[in-house]
Image (tube, rainbow, N blue to C red; front, side, top):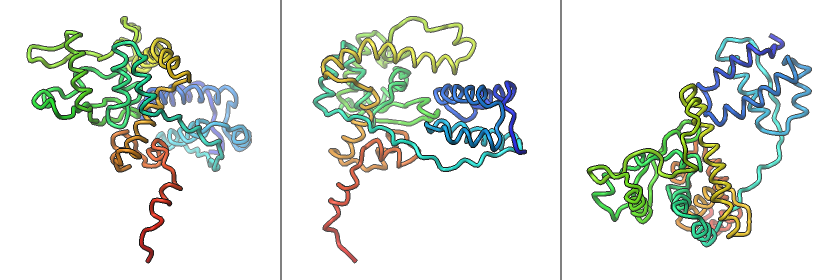
Length: 304
């Protein structure tokens, strides 16, 4: 088949197919790109694809065409797009924060969100903001820690990016402070174990109960987005004022990974597992590895 008709039926079919392949946040981005493609081109053939390739500016453009190829293949549609290699601008490297700057952020944040920032930076190799928003008291393995309070804690990150699940460590001091916070919130059960829903209240209120009853996956996406916006304007603004610079909360994750690699000398493969990355190349971008520094470190090794 030389062309693919881009009508409303096909758009609906692809959107309904996406949940089997992609996370909710990815689906939202891809759906917007798809709609713009369907609205602008109406049909995919050699002529329209040639025009599209010339106008590509974002990796998402290519990703949408790859997705269309995958959809057609899985649904026995005889259509395939030969996508040329694209050149894009290199993504901006995330700004790294020093331990002193992070301590200043923590000091500037009102309670209990100073504890929240500590969780984002100190758990594993750093958390995504969506992960701390969704984290509940039940996600932390309290029983093991309560039997040995001098040890580190463990938490399960559920429904991470791409729907993946991973286990990360929690430093012992942070575990103790979380436990003390649980006591303040009166969420200990009869066995003195914290239980219940989300650890931190990002704005409060029963968020969109009608959407939750109708489409739980879309509700989760909208919930995280609204709670992050609340955190952005009510907490991060105070931290930005203290540092006198704009803060992207995801930079704490980059900063933590880089700190573990450069200061604590944690192997890159271990950092990859803590971050939950499928590709080691992604982790290498996170830890901002200086290739020249690597060459310098092995300059005196034996030559054979």
